[in-house]
Image (cartoon, rainbow, N blue to C red):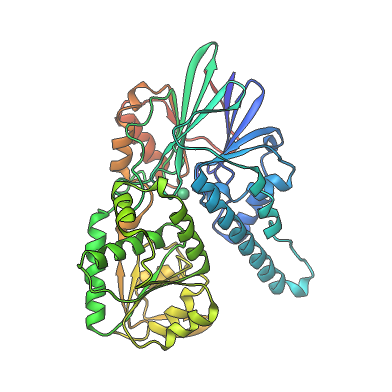
Length: 466
Ligand SMILES: [Zn+2]
């Protein structure tokens, strides 16, 4: 008998963790961190589901922390089995898990300083050492090559087009001697994203679909139009004698923007100007991109073969890791582009670049990512007159441009395109990784495509697969 147990990312977008049980063995799909409001997330992250004791193997679809960030906790709790993922995901985990540990340590410090007088101290969720203990368990697995991960259960990883190394996960097993297939979508990416190959099309016909629904009722802007707009914004800012400041996530968004800029320079569509990528994690992530040309789409492969490099030409793109070099950027009078993290402007070096540049009307802040409520990034999108940075108020006089087409998640049209060929023959579908109206939108979408047996499971729910 096969069974699914739903735990994380059930009726929410973070903390992905789904268990698949077959003949007494347990496969864990994802082991992600809950994110969001600090206290609530901490409580959710403190305890793994009780069934976690029985896990025999783990598969992670991609390196985002909401899909991998509880691996250090699983290992801390005694897990010593294999963790399967693509080689690119493995390399990204090696930089992203220690970075997540660093954030946990900073969070605990912040809490302990705030509560010092009460005497209640907390330990970080996990430390850099815990994060490093995951590494020896990571097992690289190529896309498209099936592998038996439990007795009688085979896994095949398939391109998802979401971030470097991201995959869907196909499980094949037998139920009463009948072959069965369960397709887990991971996070579904987009068609025509820069650098990355498209999601596998059509996906393999499965009996069961376990799908994310982050943007099941949205329509994103075209990606192709983003490069043109970015080009125009930079030209106008340079003409005014200003600088372009781009807050961007270190893994994925930064590389997409750099790749677009490189293309614009090389094709002569934009007069080259210095581009500074000011974030140690971005520099490390870019090295991972360079080591994994097997993940590039045809256009990026051509570009890489003809230029020898994809994301650093050695002339205009400068990666900055040193703090002194980062500070020195303030003194440069010439027009330039500065990309820096964190993506939502909550911490990191981007704060310095914002405070030094937003009071100059010649400059432009370009928003290329989602900005959650209550973040500085969101207040910039709302074009508030005054912004508080490090406790001081600054006037927002720089222009603000929002480019909505950079999302790494499929929208409704892309889900339709992917699931239309397989939906009519599904025996059932489980909708996870979405909030508010999104799971309903995905159930409606599947229903309209001919799959009338979908459900949105709750955390803790067990479902038998017949
Ligand atoms: Zn993701």
